[in-house]
Image (tube, rainbow, N blue to C red; front, side, top):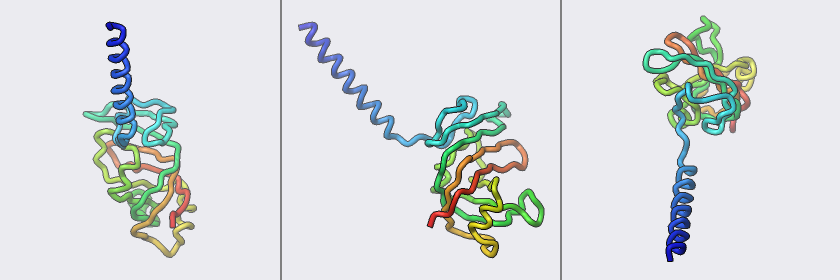
Length: 164
């Protein structure tokens, strides 16, 4: 009788444990992460961490984290954003609220979700030189890079293509 109760108890524990595990795996992963707790090769939102270099700063972190993997985003394309490059500017993308949760973000990073392209000519050509601002754009990016510091810095990504 004791063996039977042990087997029933063990099976129940395994069944409950299996339910909990499958329940947790179906829960979406948060896009906010602690950069001091990730390593090269880890995955966040399906993107592979290719490098991370951070230092503690006040109650958060400053530094960079680079990711490999394509992400489809919606938002506003601006061909000549002049935040950092003077009058000519560089092409940047302002991610809408819905898509913002598809990009990793350092814990404590309260900035709006936007980035500039590390291949600016490809992005400008895809959107055409005459289309300086495009609302409701949908694009695919790769090589997303978080750059976070208490100064004027901007995240980066590689433009891949426009989604029609």
